[in-house]
Every structure is written in C-alpha cells, then in structure tokens.
Image (cartoon, rainbow, N blue to C red; front, top):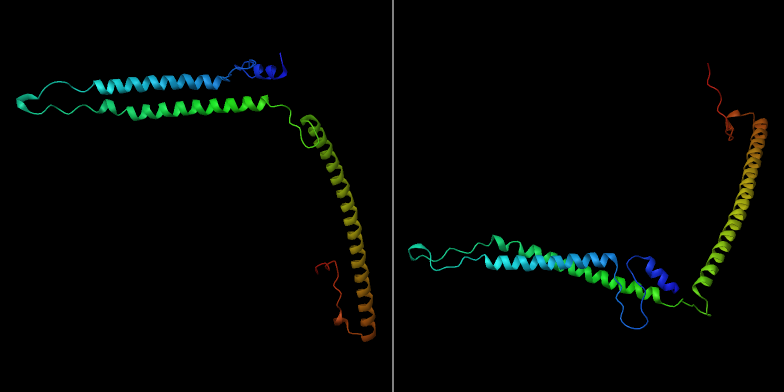
Length: 195
C-alpha cells in the first residue's frame, strides 16, 4: 500500500483511490447526511401525497349548497418538510464537496518552495530559525537588563551626590547667615511625633 493509501484508509470509511477512473470519497458524515436526505425526500413525498388526497370529493352540499371547503390542516406540514428536504440535501452537497477538496489536498505532491526545498526541509529550516530567534531574544533581554541596571545605578549615584551637595551647601549657608528657616533640604525620614 502506498503512503497516501495508508493515510486515507486510517481516516475511517475512506478507501484507496484506484489508478485511473473516477473516485468519490465517501466519509461517515456524508453517508449519514445522504440517509437523512433520502428520509427527508420520502417524508416530503408522503406529506404531499397525503395533503393532496385529503380533499373531500363529492358533489354539492346539502340543500343545493356549495361543497364544504377542503381541510387545509394536513397541508400545514408541507413547508416544514420542504425546508428539511432542502437543508438535508444542501448539507449533503456541502460535505461531499468538502470531502473531495480534502482528497485533492492529500493527493498533492510534496510542495517545493523556491530553490527546490521540500516541506520537511522547510519545516526543519523554520525550526532552526525559531531557535535562533529565541537565542537572539534572550541575548537582547540580557543586554537590556544589564544596561538598565547600570543606568539605574548611575542615576541613583547622581541623585545621592546631588542630595549630599545640596545638604552641604544648605549647611554652609545656614552657618554663614545664622537663619535656620532658609533650609531647602527636606529630610528623608519624618521626625517622630511628640509624645
């Protein structure tokens, strides 16, 4: 058995395509929908037959009056059965077309890309490319993390130096002027509340 035949026979009710000739792929879903469509056809024929034969036959009514109107209750089911008939055959047609498209897709030869690359080789190349991209992303993340930590350390150092310089200048200013209210430096810690 060929590789394609093994794939097709393992899917269920599908059989190997004979060499040459016409092949209709029949899946379990298609068989079920065909049975439902045939049943809907039978139901429609029965409903139409019963609806048309229920009309009363006979001549004029009593005392020369016209005959009574026909009973239309049996005709009310015909639109419902007609809808089931149309939907079941439409579903069977859609599934048939889907099965044929899937069969044609499975029968295609391995796709070769530019340069004669087969699908398996292309899959391998893509896996290698994904691995390289993941390694590059990890390297970039590490470099960014190092740059951010260095910049954060630099900013923290600059802030500390400026705070220290401001404190020193404020202390010198207070020492020369003697005015303690001119302080511009705020303490980092709040003083404890008085007891």
